[in-house]
Figure 1 (tube, rainbow, N blue to C red):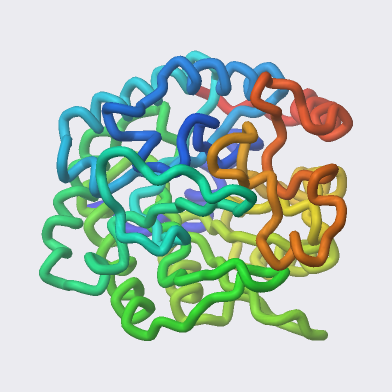
Figure 2 (cartoon, helix red, strand yellow):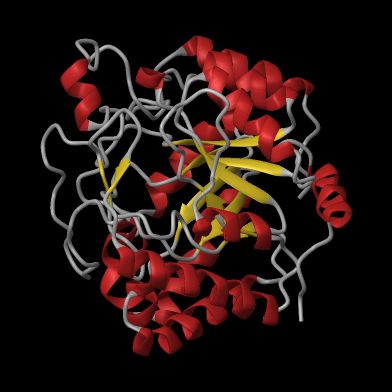
Length: 362
């Protein structure tokens, strides 16, 4: 059984792989991960094109989520498409972080197969679909099937060098609504309790499959801003930090607070991955925070690559209400639909850092 990596083991692995500079990935043609991964709408040509743009501008890593519902309906097809995706990523020298579960179902719908609803005009990430979805997370009778899914996917790719890292569960317990400058979270006691237990089980299941890659779950709940604060105090975040081989976290916040978060997490002695950031309207900018993360040896994975159906170039609704420049200033994402950068200055900075950074070894 694969036990939790020692701090020294995790640091040695991180040094071997160098500085990953990545992004969270959905192709511009997909409104959510169900649409990305199901057979009818898997868009290999667009993925190939977009990952080519990413490589040309200096990215070398990405993070993407897998849909339980597609595995359940089309197990062999999904595994084949994951292999195709990994082949395309390797072609463009991009290593992949695979995320197995996700509680961010901002559409309000339980996951469903087939044609997905179109994006709501003017709304940020309006059709985000969770995996496996709140109903299944909150029903322990469904957990044996979730266990089969997790073990099956990990077993297929546990020795695959194209997979850099396993992210077992994105933002467990998140019943968020886009209501404040930081994402306000609706309290859902049942979901939090079940997600906490399911996350612990997922670590156990994956470690029993003995993958060669390290495991992580992000800490993501930032408390309201206050002087002398500590971060990620929620029990779910504390468990995620305690069980992860490498530490991952989400931080859509200004640079002063990002600096304090990094300093706190560095005390854990493990490599740091910021697996979600970049929210230009709230001070989370490439110009300020990419050099900070490079200097602090944090692997950054911004939200978004190409402006598309998720509409995440638009701010969270409350930011849009308060901002008059949302048409000029993108919230997330870095490329237009034709591959032209939103900001050539941002891309030039990233390319400069990539030139001096150790390369990720394949």
